[in-house]
Image 1 (tube, rainbow, N blue to C red):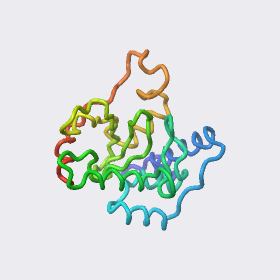
Image 2 (spheres, rainbow, N blue to C red; image 1 turned 90 degrees about the horizontal axis):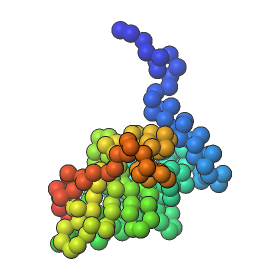
Image 3 (cartoon, one colour; image 1 turned 180 degrees about the vertical axis):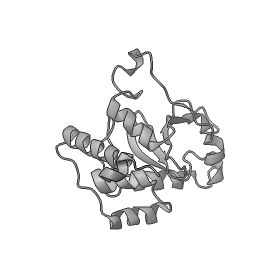
Image 4 (spheres, rainbow, N blue to C red; image 1 turned 135 degrees about the vertical axis):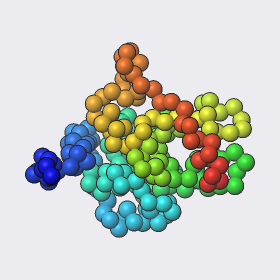
Length: 195
C-alpha cells in the first residue's frame, strides 16, 4: 500500500478547494456572512425535504452563509428574503401538480444570474450537477428546453469560478475555449417525476 501526500498532510482535495474558496470569498466580500452551524443545515434539510449535496453543505458550514461565488453570489441558506430554502419551496410549490412543472425535485437554487436565470445544484445527483435554468426558450408547454447542464459537478463548477474560466465571466465569449451550458438530458424525466 502506498502512502499519498494527502494522508501525510491530512488535507484532501476538497479541503484544499474549500480553503481556496474561503480565501477568495473573504477577498471578494469584506462583509461575508458567518458560516451556518449543523443545526441550521438540519433545519434547511428538514424544510427542503431533501439532503443537501455534501459539498454544498460544507460550503455553507465552512465558508459562509452565501455572499460569495460567481457574479451575484450564493444565496443565504435560510432567512427572510431570497434564500436557497425559500426559492426552492416557492418553485416546487408552483410545480407540484402542474400540467407543465417548471422546477424539478431535488434541484436547489443557489444563485441568480439576473434576467430570471438561476443556477441550481442537483442534490439528487452524486456529483451535485450544477444546472442553469434559463426561461427565455419557454414558448408554452414543457419547461424542459429551459434547463441546461452547466457543470457535471459542483466541485468542477467551483474550480471554474476560481480559475475565472466560466461562461459567466466577463469576456468569456471572446475566448476560443469557452464551454457553454448544454441542454440537460434529464430535464423531461426529472421535471415530471416529482410533479
